[in-house]
Length: 124
Image 1 (cartoon, helix red, strand yellow):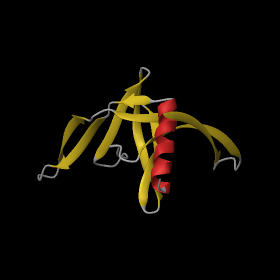
Image 2: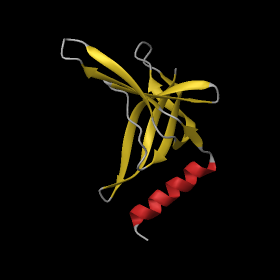
Image 3: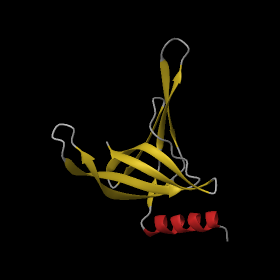
């Protein structure tokens, strides 16, 4: 078994231990050719992700001190159809009665292959 396959399998097992099945609604904006844009929504096939909370240290610009904030992150399989928020795209899903949007998606590589995706998620 290759290293890439091994990491992908480990991430799949990690996701399976606490899976969130997210049905993503993707809102896309496209140029309408008249100086504006048109908006369209599409529902994607469900994606298995794992959501978790993480504490991070942030520096307070006003006081110069450090504080701890809770952020929501997730991981998804290497081939998940999840996009980061941009000026022309927004992916949202509902889980546990709360709505979330995907702020950022980072592809994690090993030997030039994507092995899993890290997600930054925000409750809306």
